Length: 239
Length: 272
Image (cartoon, rainbow over all chains, first blue to last red; front, side, top):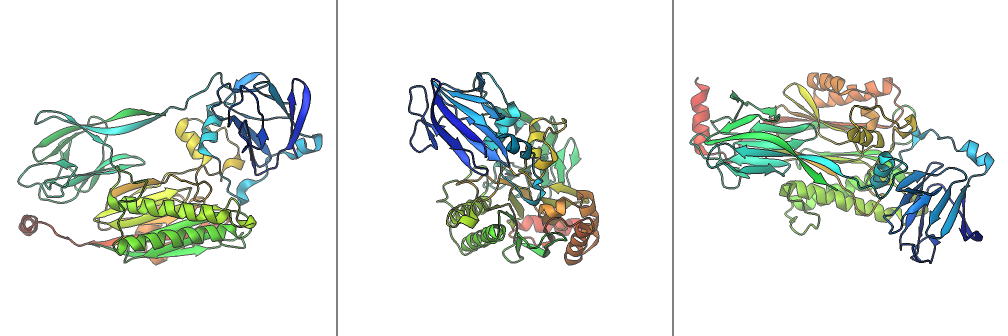
């Protein structure tokens, strides 16, 4: 079983065993598994997750950072001999020789394990990174630009946007042949789709009538009743 | 009013001794659920069954008139009905999470869940984990679930690149019911059409049968026969995991409170 040796200025303080399947927390707060009461140590400074024989150290956005072999890390898989530095304390990660060879990844086909998405994102971003790397995930949102009646924009933030004559719709469109519930735009894994729901008048995309559903591409022109709109996907930056 | 005809099978497969999958379907409430449990000993079975029971119970309460306004996680991007499904899933997560702390053998038990609910001429789908949901419409098949697996998330972040994760990561999930205090499901709402076919399953099915094969088999046979064919095919190809499948066909979409004008025009058009 791997172990961590906690030292302060070279002097041995305490030892901890890393059990597979557990999470070991490190920080100043007494609720941690490894409590380090020292200036420069955050309440919840770092943690070590175990994933079938391998150990992942993650910095919990601490004020002063977590270092492995003197390099600032966000997240990093630990190997034998690694020295973790937190403020003025060090933690030495030891795996005995017999354990090291047995640490080959086991066949996981029988079980399904969970990885915390944040840990996983950090792992993908790179084991070592200078400074706190922020995960900026780029998402797209569909936007309809009105080409008639004074312009303006409508952001398709809902999963299902209803269009029609009735006042309950998200986009109200006038027109004698437009149904109360006329069309809808749904946001799906593959993108945005426009569907004809009801009413004598069918919506048109680039001049062609939509009989059931059609996938919307950037710059498609949608016409329904009195409204003419251009569809586009614009990026939304989220952290 | 949507009328649905469905069938569903869950099979232990060829290699496992117990079935940790669970399914539920109700053509009257028009709710369909698949859950694939994980965890040691009996935990998987307990988790998947608890997920089904909880969601079914919550949705039945809503069906009887309960309101969803007080739901804390109410998402404005979703309709009321979709929020009902979302709140049921979150409740299931709390139940499994709490139960897992009550007994040593239930520690870290969890489950995937895939849910489908028809209402107001729309189909609402929601999932956590890797149990797939497909929609067959107009001769094509579309995936209405998001894969919450390590490999899929990496592919989404680095599209087009080869995965750097070894084969041992094939079954690693990034989200599951019950593992943490809160969970985020992926939900979609799409309009529903007569003739549309919904197919839901556990990864024991998607791991062995491609979506093209599902489209082909399901389009040609009635739900019960289609389920049987799919399970047999997955078993023929190894049956390493439990296999669960639900096939639901929208047989009719009776016009509800449509406007009189629409009916007149419909009659008018029939002649042309």
